[in-house]
Length: 237
Image 1 (cartoon, rainbow, N blue to C red):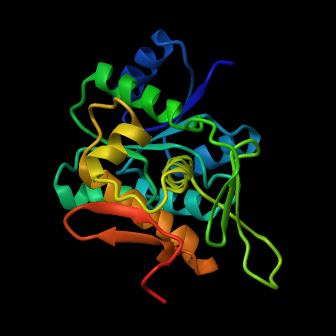
Image 2 (cartoon, rainbow, N blue to C red):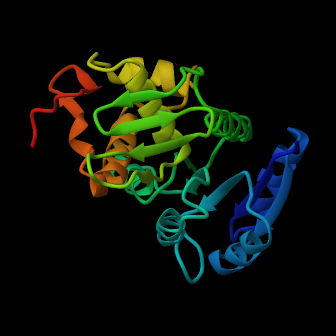
């Protein structure tokens, strides 16, 4: 199956450059110059991945990303944020808004294609571990579903983006162990040389936010100076 990439970029020359390189890499490409046009296109067909410019006429890319993450249908859509903003605070804001990765202008077309490939690979579940259980959390790799199951309460489905799902699956398959950011990058992101360690913190934050409505965020613990772990006996109550 050919992956479809939707480029939301209001500068025609940049959109054309991206489209040419993605087409040469074997992807099907659609383009939109603003968020509202992209929304209309996605109603007809959901792309495999969205390349989203930060500065758009009308609705900004950051605002659009937040809306997509709040929508059940588009919550798991991989988003690559593209912008001229290069300060760390801007990168964090872009990731916090819902982007899975961040590329600054000017950019290398080869790097952009590599990041697209990496994001699409990340949609594939990590090694099939079989059903997993930690505390009230149950994960079934065969159906790619996660539930929070508390006593005397109906099982509640937990909606996660692709990266957060892979993080949780890795944690649950290696419960009680402390994992450094470097270890998480190696095991969850794989050999993706462009991913920064700071990105791990952002996705941990998003994973906790997704688990919080079910009182399950406290099972993901920060071990100061070492990393993160999932535990069956959280100290936080």
